[in-house]
Image (tube, rainbow, N blue to C red):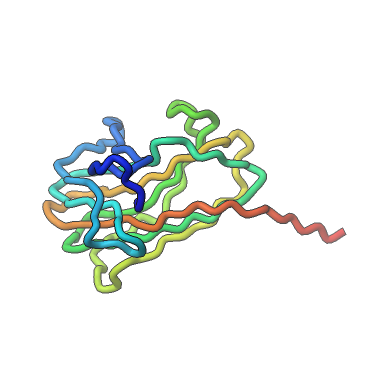
Length: 168
């Protein structure tokens, strides 16, 4: 979230999810925060005013099903009691929404635990279905809190070779 070439409130290369079937509608204010960040100078910020909201990468990331991937991201919250925050990785066969093959999410976690500050979420994506060629990353807030704040930052998706050990 460090690049903001257009000085906008939407992070470069990210867009707000508009998906009525998933009920991503809310009065939540979103944007870039320069006052709270895990590392660097900015993070993705949601000022919660009730409802669900999500941002996703505006482009599709290439995925090689013969490799493994490691996802890392950081989340912080303040004054949220019942909402849930998580990262979601959507896997696609083509660069189009209708070609969704699978969704992988970090464990959906109640965000009432605020004492720890930033919380790291990480998972390994292996055994990818052969049809998968692309991915999109989402930063998701689901819940009914009527006030509070949350931040997402330092999101990475690393490719690593998949090594198969043969005992013969």
